[in-house]
Amino acid sequence: MKYLPYNYYEFESNLTPREIKDKLVKNISEVVKFSNLSAFQNNDDYFFQGIIKSDSFIICRKIDRRKDSFRAILSGKIESKSNKSIIKIKARLKWPIYIFMFIYTIPLVFVCLVMPFKLPFDEFKFELINFMILIPYAMLFFSYLLFNIPFQEDSKNTIEFIKNTIR
Image (cartoon, rainbow, N blue to C red; front, side, top):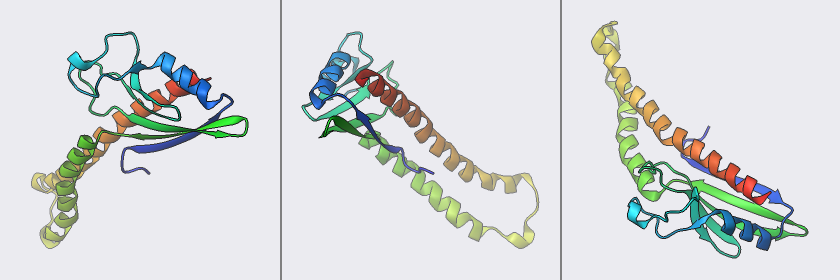
């Protein structure tokens, strides 16, 4: 089970690193700036933007109506091995999202760990107030889903785009 939104992918291609770079350059728009402001976005028909160098790249989905908080940023390296190329890709969130995730979940984890020791088990009755102890656990579960589901979906879509582009 993955607790942090971070993935590592590795796959092979029969193309040379130069051919892979050329295909990526044709299908990915150049980044003006990784920003939330639409003024900094290229107004073209590309769905992905990035920086592509000779043996490495950074790719992410273009911002769609300011829904970019949990978009995956993929950084990859292209290595040549005999007649094949190996593409190693790391998918992660932006650093401010990790910081927000830490600030949001640490108090919840603390409450979830301390709360069982503070409950009076001898007087525990099934009343409405006792079910309120489940709220921090539900919030922790919600935060896990909030951070991971959009990231995993975006990461999967971007990897599929890269695989289809390189074929």
